[in-house]
Image (cartoon, rainbow over all chains, first blue to last red; front, top):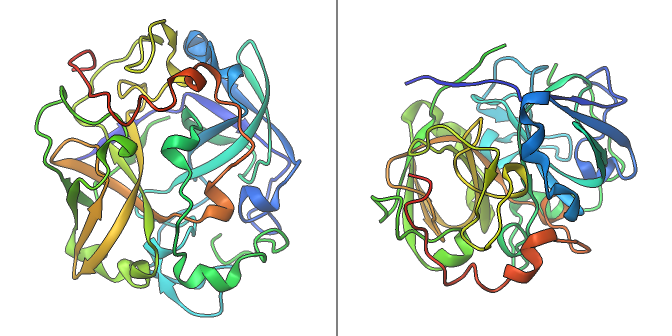
Length: 159
Length: 159
């Protein structure tokens, strides 16, 4: 079974190289980017400006191949791929919650971008805490890495 | 540009019809399902059991076509598609945060499932509040619908 998708837009960010990037939106606080939605989808953006945060799903076009064990940027041990947010995945779909500043025509101004410039956009969803925010959470290996995410930058291990 | 993905597993739930389903995990609290990950990806599940919640990305295989304006289950006005979580989208990728109960071999036991039985799985990511939970949030049209999500069931409008 093959599943085929097509980009609905392009994400523009200051990052042109996989090394030296913030590793999550938390490390990209205030970093501005734009999401250019293709004109044919423009009408679907109505009402989006009421939301302060949106979920971007995108194709991690800089990533090819994958390994089932990886060393995360925020850890010192190999972990199972699906217990990490590493970009090289069987289906390299990226997910970021970003702050939406404004919507002008087909262009969304966003903050906290952590993806590569030119990233193909797959979907936009409104961020809704009742659905998306969990509070009572165990964070596995990541628990000891909390706080590192904001400062650590990527290197070239997933190039 | 075409982007091709392949399922990495199948999600099993009690729901075999698009009508009468919970419309989000919040309406599916305690509903049990299983995620069957294909054997070739099994090693990637290591360390996942440390996380109480995981993000499932999946192909909304019951959805075909889309309209750029939709009437959400929780509203009485037409809204721009990307300001809703409606399943009929240009790229029908579903996203649910579910509770992970246990991992046995290739099978994850999960709770709060809100997808159709037999849904093709695209990716699993650990839910990490530092990345995924936003607190200071404006929720647009959804603000007045908060609280309805837990009780409302789907009908056949997105069949």
